Image (cartoon, rainbow, N blue to C red; front, top):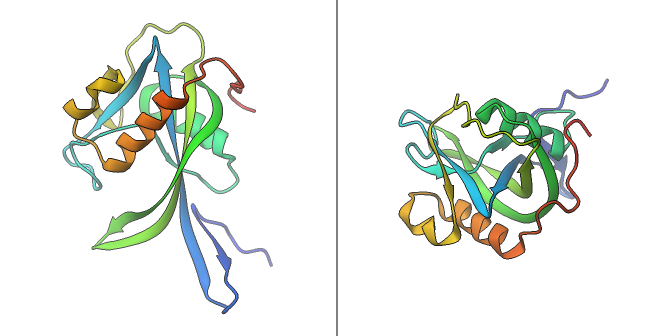
Length: 167
């Protein structure tokens, strides 16, 4: 019988203990040398009122790219083309009641698919901004989010190696 997979992926270590880790993806969406950031709602369970990148957890059966395209569409209404991953982080993600799970976060360069000039359709956030690197200190965000954005600006290669949605 095959075990049902969850969004928290696991494996067994040499001592027979189950190791689990949440896998998350973040989109660094560039437009005219600016990066999209979204402000979490004040009632958000993690990091309320913090600014963040679009993204979220990888669901069972999804590739990282599929998860990222889905998350950006859910959070903004936009479709993105996804480039190569450029930054990965190991972290402890809060899951409630003071508990945390080991997590791996992978950030990708992205661009809007098409020439949308419409503002994002925010469903999970209260505001959005397009920022340049020097704007980072003006926005309250986690250290890990700021690190990913700095790395994105340092490695920016727009329009190269971007995948079309659905691949």
